[in-house]
Length: 76
Image 1: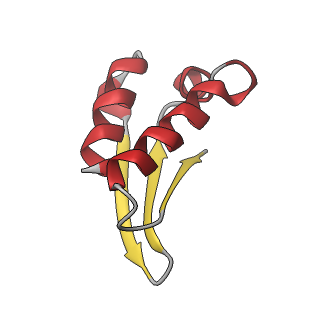
Image 2 (image 1 turned 180 degrees about the vertical axis):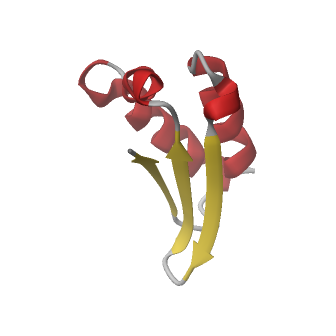
């Protein structure tokens, strides 16, 4: 569920959704979601002062419903 939510949000934020890659890896510490996008779109995903990426992280953790730890990373 958190992966689908992050994918939906980020696809609607970026200007070039075809150059977007979102992967999820399960590990000992929980779920790690990695976002890869074009350099021009990175600013849109981060937002002013990091507000958008922090909101995405908060929503992903809420979607996990406390069952697992979720970490969202923007990879340059």
